[in-house]
Figure (cartoon, rainbow, N blue to C red):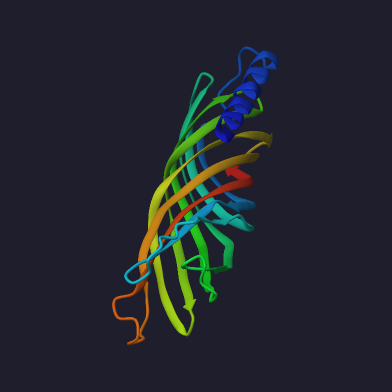
Length: 241
């Protein structure tokens, strides 16, 4: 549903610009581009922790990471315009401050007087994309859709305290995924342009065991699974070479 609103807004904007733009415009979007961007990430990660071995009840309640954080990065790319149609290929690399720790108290079995304490940590220090872009160019504006490859480093850690026994597990990995979105770009002074862009980014999932070094619980462990999508809202300043 969210994507529908994004794409509908882009379509309405393009229709309005087409109706108000001059009918004949020389190409002005062709060329190579460098730029910077700043914005916010809204986390949409979902995590599940499952007890295994001697635990008799299955617990699979999803945990939601819904925090927001700053992001900033650089972009390189190139576009070529034929009539009103603009095609291009862009890549960007971005630093993020997406970092969150969630703590929960659970009872497994559910009538147990002693709760489990779970601490779930996630950090995405950076991500990048490589994506084609297609758009419609006007005298001063370009409306575009984009999508392609996404990659980034994802760090997660799961810590569980069951009475006096600690279970821990973690993973740090560069993961591959996909991205899709769109935006509008405004050319305001010779080689300079300003854009507003939205991207949905999915960096796949992580799956691992949280185990204990205690001899009292041989073979007992928890499995942790993290799915790591997020929303990226940002503005950019580009210079066309």
